[in-house]
Amino acid sequence: MTNDEIRLARAADVPAVKAVTDMAYHPYVARIGVVPQPMEADHMANVAVGRVFVAGEPVIGLVVIEAHEDHLFLDSIAVHPAAHGRGVGGRLLEFVDARARALGLPEVRLCTNVLMWENRKLYPKYGYEVVERRVDGPYDRVHYRKRLG
Image 1 (cartoon, rainbow, N blue to C red):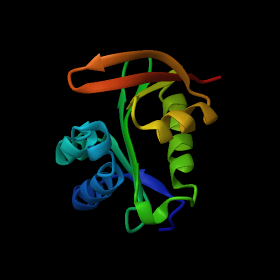
Image 2 (image 1 turned 45 degrees about the vertical axis):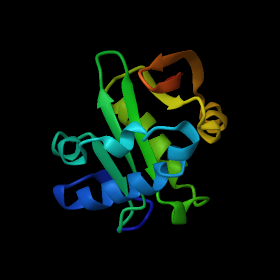
Image 3 (image 1 turned 135 degrees about the vertical axis):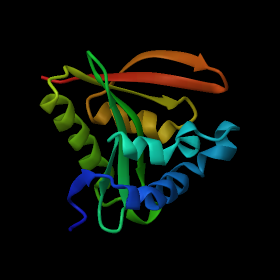
């Protein structure tokens, strides 16, 4: 398998899913003052219900998605720090769009912490627009949507 392929995660991928997620989100712990939610996710449960898709062999990136009646929610996207700058994140975002279209869903939604400014610069470049800013418990988040044409 090449690093360009994205596939449904299997139970054997759970340790890599956790490791890549932790490496991708750990730098934000000090900045936002709490552990980012993706680091506390039940990775085994997410994989078991088919919500996790991985890129690369070994895994260098992943998305966690959830289909709703009117949109696909991008719960988490993570890229191994060693793979930054290689287009993995962009390919994962394109995969999410394609998945939403395949499911007949008109838009993708996501949110990110207000202090994760790198993400807030990135998402508009991929067609996402800000919907609202909302505080959810300890998380101050900016919510986005991308309408698919």
